[in-house]
Image (cartoon, rainbow, N blue to C red):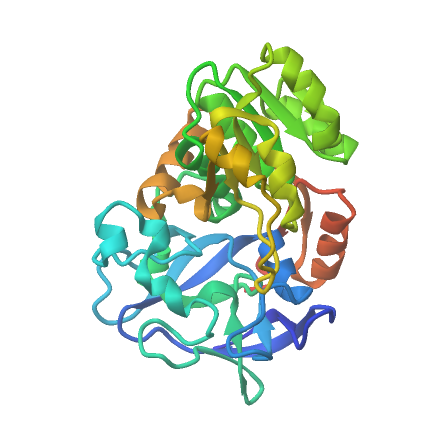
Length: 378
């Protein structure tokens, strides 16, 4: 079928709205009409060249990996969903059979090895073309298009009464932030937690810390609007920088420092690690959720303090969550009023306004921008 998509033709170029040819689902795949797609910072990493395509220079690229919609077609052998089902797209497929899935780590499923190749999980071919050129959709989803054809392992069925435009948010940002607190940092009752970077992921790390029972939640971000918003999500204290927060955290914790720190900045750098580690106590945990340049290797870390104070530095993808369990579970929290989703969307955009949406994100105007699809797009 012919549809449209937001396409990148190279790093540091504007998104272009192009007509594309989307293939029908083959065995093991489904086609979905999307209701909405979040504007996540991960797609910006491709835009600015932090996340090179595989192989390098493999454009055109279709962005978007945070979406929800309705199944319109199913390929042979698909059993997990049927036409008419409402689904959230998980940017990490979960086969349920590989060693990682079998041990409760669906976010590390072996199917993830192909996510930046543009080649479909089902048969290794390209499912979408721009003119005569095969396109690489972000995480094999490409939600910056009103229709997608994806592997069923990336489609998570949800109840029909949950608003799809809100459900889209748990496909990446909400679950990544929430899980960074609950799973990666293992936030517990009475913990003091520091969240560094309060955008779409950081605000949900704050929510996770709140729901985990943290006593003090310190939000750090240079943007005043984001610090103010963090208080609504559950933060108890806010600061503009890590350096500014050191003395207050020392006083707040009677000299012990924070139990947990989670860094969710839009563009991670190695020098942030040493600064973050100074904020946590002996035996404390620091979680790196923010994404940096794929080729950067240098990290600053005081090795003496790291070992002698027995601190832990933990990486985190998708908040160490399991898509097939945690996506529906978080939506239950939302329906019960415990998880805030309505408040997260600062502004909605059409697909044609995608460059405006990312400009707003980079300027610090948005917590989460959202592309809404309508009859005009379908």
